[in-house]
Length: 90
Image 1 (cartoon, rainbow, N blue to C red):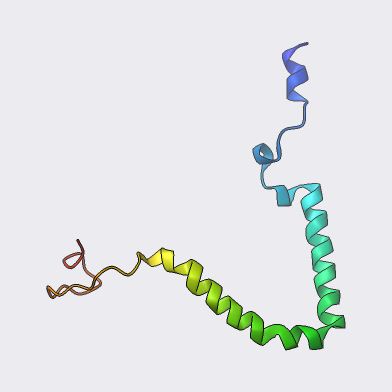
Image 2 (cartoon, rainbow, N blue to C red):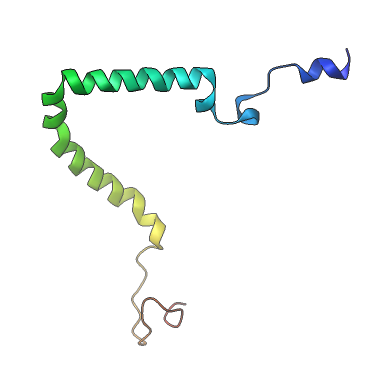
């Protein structure tokens, strides 16, 4: 077996790029787009009826999962440093 035989083997999905840009990924995205279109057009009343619940649940999930991005809730300074400066941070 020569080195050239190894070059023609299919590579892993991670080596060539994203899985969604593969043939199967594009087919899945197309199918989901068509299914979403028909879901919205045929079941508009059901979708709009669920929107208040989706909004409330999205607020809860954003509150739970997005709090890690701003550094937590440590103690507040009492030495007079403004919150935007490094003087009050330890």
